[in-house]
Length: 85
Image 1 (cartoon, one colour):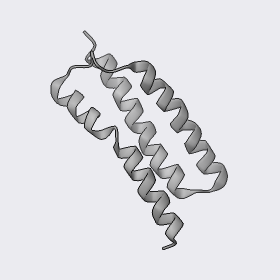
Image 2 (cartoon, rainbow, N blue to C red):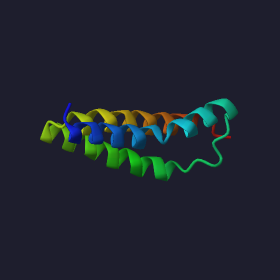
Image 3 (cartoon, one colour):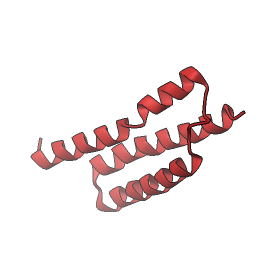
């Protein structure tokens, strides 16, 4: 495996995984008062653009890891509106 591919996948996985603790905490506590929907909307737009860029460049690490980030952003927005008081 090429070194740059390993670095790209590693960076993408770590960045994408950064929202997992927030998703888990929100599901467990069902508390979304601390969650900013605007932040996740901005992240969703940015990650969506990264996915598009990855597709244009045929760059698998960018496409896969940012697709996962899009999924996490959508999950947090869904949880925000599901558990909103």
